[in-house]
Image 1: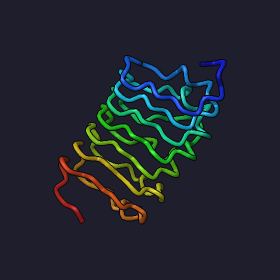
Image 2: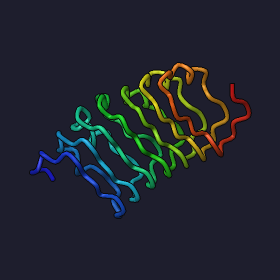
Image 3: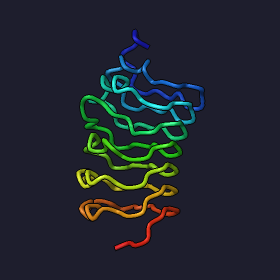
Image 4: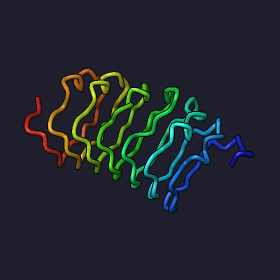
Length: 159
């Protein structure tokens, strides 16, 4: 892939891929779909080159323990799908300042970071089937939030 730097869309879903390091040279990449693979982690180098152009990252049904990170913010990413993984927290979510849709259902998330309030454009937040007990008060700062899915968690009060 190193020779074809004009690729904007990559779909490698339903394979046995363990790494996305081969994408690190794709500076024009806008959408990456790598669902249903065996990815355990995304190295910081894998998506740093395309951090300025990426709009959607779809990594559901893998073995991720954390959300993808980069040396620079994912300024254009509006969709992050990391459902059905092994993610325990959303540390680094502030690297996605223009996120509109976050789907992180079916993970092991116990709490939401306070930085979630920085996602002022967030319209859809899917966190069903996790281990969340409480929501931060800052969730109310997300005035554009239209869909909040929290079923099958451990929440004992909702105010």
